[in-house]
Length: 253
Ligand SMILES: C[S@@+](CC[C@H](N)C(=O)[O-])C[C@H]1O[C@@H](n2cnc3c(N)ncnc32)[C@H](O)[C@@H]1O
Image (cartoon, rainbow, N blue to C red; front, side, top):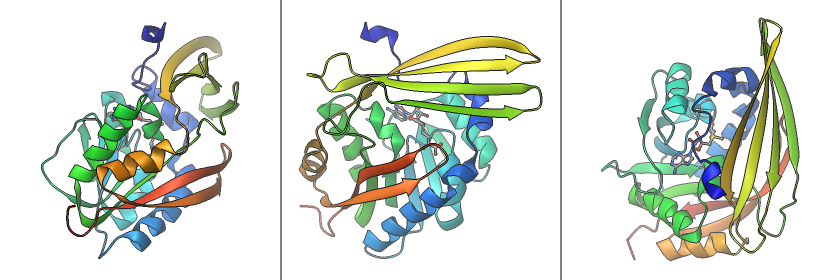
């Protein structure tokens, strides 16, 4: 059953991304997150590694303040990000094991952390962040949802159009087995081109953990963790989630 689901987003449908989401929609969120990072780091923050950088929408704003390097599993998404941010360095890689052999002042793992489906994977992603941070640097990550807050059939609908093409996406969450750490995330695309309708679906498997797993796992990697509640309204939704500002201590312990 789980084999039907995939983790790489939008490889076939990446072309729809600019229609349904514009970088301006995440501009305010990216600015707020940048302030959090700068406020928590020891010393200046000039370089930022974005793990799971997707189509580069957050980087569109991050690049105003930081020298950004983006890493994503999907070549399609990396291609889109390169078009949007031609001066940003983008690499194809897996946040669970990529090693670039250099360090940064800050690392972010944003919505893409939901693709970590076990505690071991969550820890592997945090270890990647640790390996790429200088002492005093900061990892910013967040839990879009947790076991405690999760609701089945939460649905988002969004439409974008350009010229003769419109795309409506319907996103639905569902948890077939509340005893494990995964949920299903299904996306239906209604694509109208030159008046003709085509319907595509993507099915993803994502992680879902109790809240306590987040600080515990981050601390097990060595981070000094500060938890905040992040509240934010976007064109997609009113968001409120636990956010973790994790500093790498000045000396490795
Ligand atoms: C919703 S998109 C991220 C959008 C991004 N925040 C932006 O600003 O455009 C989620 C991304 O996570 C990526 N992803 C999933 N698993 C990954 C992994 N193990 N390593 C790196 N990227 C991963 C997917 O390829 C996808 O591009």
